[in-house]
Image (cartoon, rainbow, N blue to C red; front, side, top):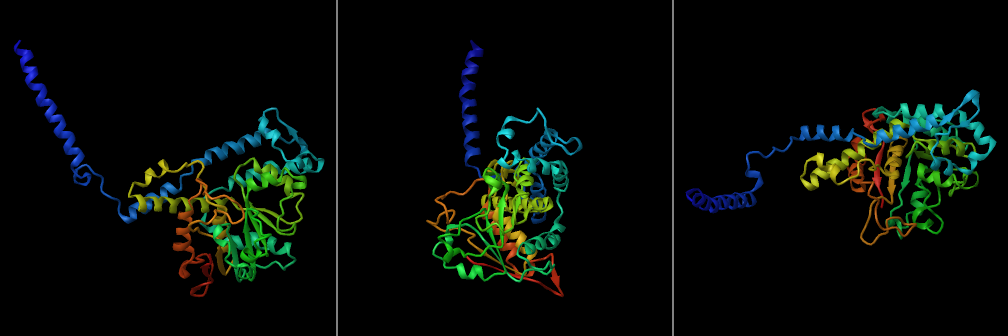
Amino acid sequence: MGMKRSLRLRLPLLLFIAVTVIFIFKTLPFRSLAFQVAPLSASALNATLLRLAAIDPGDADLRKQAEDLLDAYYFPTGALRFSSSIPLWRREHHPRSLRSAKAFHSLPDFGRHLRQWFLSKRYNPAIMSNLLTLFKPPIDAAFGRTNTTHPYASCAVVGNSGILLNSNHGDLIDSHDLVIRLNNARIAGFRSDVGAKTNLSFINSNILHLCARRDRCFCHPYGDSVPIMMYICQAAHFVEYLTCNSTHKSPLLITDARFDVLCSRLVKYYSLKRFVEETGRSPEEWSKTHDERMFHYSSGMQAVMLAVGMCDRVSLFGFGKAVNAKHHYHTNQRAELDLHDYEAEAKKYTERLLNFSVCNPWRWRGSTPSCTCRTVT
């Protein structure tokens, strides 16, 4: 009896203590608790951002894709045989041109090209200084120009934002020495706003994947003499690149894999930085709001980086957004894709590329940088 009475007396006391503790934890500012982690210093935060930006969870998937493709094809003495291990979807999605004898004859180099591309996929910022010599000669050759290593005096990168509508920038765009357009955006019907001149079509390999289903891999909305440059999204698209390249009158170029890695790290760094600045949360929590395996830079971002490496002056058109503006000027799409961080890319342009002193840190003439940049919306 005495023990029961003791328990009855203690129970209200325990409940009171529990309620009091919960109330204190809910009302006491978190910053006053002794166990709160102190914010990182600027240098420590930057080091953390750089470390996290270097992590690419999708790299393992890409490696697996490349290994599967190399295992799926066997080349005895230059003749192609299909391995029984090729997944059904790959057989069904081969481009039409793969069925021709000429296309099969071109595929024995597939393994060599794929290995070379994949093995060069590493971080090397010095690739920026090589863009001019890597890509300007084939672009010039397509228009009958003499191969030179002198940069273009002016370049326009034309984005696809709906803010271009009613801008009347067409003549200004066409006045540049090199005009780069993105992902086969239409110009017919929009020439007063986006111009008519195109010197380079910059696409991602998903665009070529769609083109490959057409007769002779037709992918030339700007004319079959305009060079096409693309970055590889999936290793399987290398098959379509090799087959379509043999049917193209103009050069079909692939971005250097080192350039891809550099762009990937830059965009992820600025996305992490933006996340920390806007939320006040730890950069390690960035992955909770982004699909790390799908996160990727946009075609426009890499085209801008390419222009910075090849041009003295770079102008950006159709980069940005406005209230009530369509996502793309030539489509009815209004929503942005979750796999890109356009705001972070815009911050990179502002902080890195549009500042005269660092506009082109990879090429100098005397004591001053060789280019200036501007943005035109």
